Amino acid sequence: MLSPPRSERGPAMRRRLLIPALLLLAGACTARDPDRLVIGVSYDRPAATASPQSDADMRRVLDVEAHQICTRGYDPVKVSTLAAEDTQEIVSEDLRCRDYHLDFTPDLDFD
Image (cartoon, rainbow, N blue to C red; front, side, top):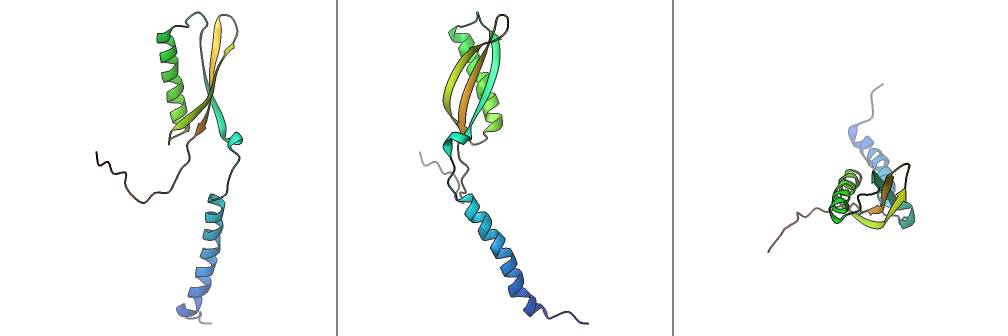
């Protein structure tokens, strides 16, 4: 048996690819609950080191951890300090990653 000519197979293949592409596009455009997008990073430090310098160091550590998770940046939601064992405390930051967006234009800076 010979296979059907190529012109007869084309429209069916296009439909088979078009339907999943439209489903993926519709799924990417749906709204989501912002409360479920909050994640947290934390780090421990000695409890007696609450100075502006140690706070700045802690912010840098938490920022590095957050940027490993959120590659497009993040918005902080809440920072809290919790007591831990012995003389330690845990600094926890809740954050929300910024959305990804499809952009075909380059970032041009005209300043």
